[in-house]
Image (tube, rainbow, N blue to C red; front, top):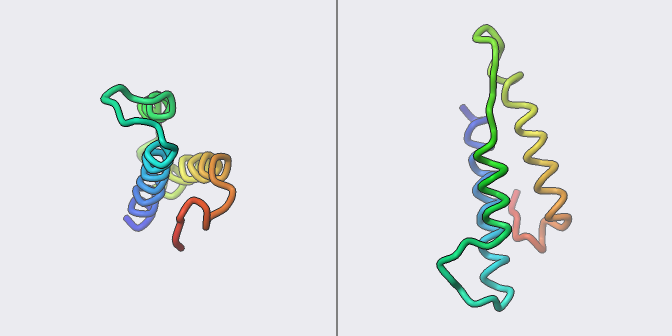
Length: 86
């Protein structure tokens, strides 16, 4: 369950970063979603996992974890600038 918690924390950090970045760029708030929010929704809602029921949970989670880490590294190269805390 700790891997699931880590994935949730990473996802929330990415979501908070996107939302705070939009709010601090001087863009007026509106009810319409931004392109970044729509892209994140499109990316996250398209995740489908097919797996063998005999496979260990770690094998199922690792590819998703690596993809999320790569996405975070792509958009946030500096942990301090993104306000990430270890």
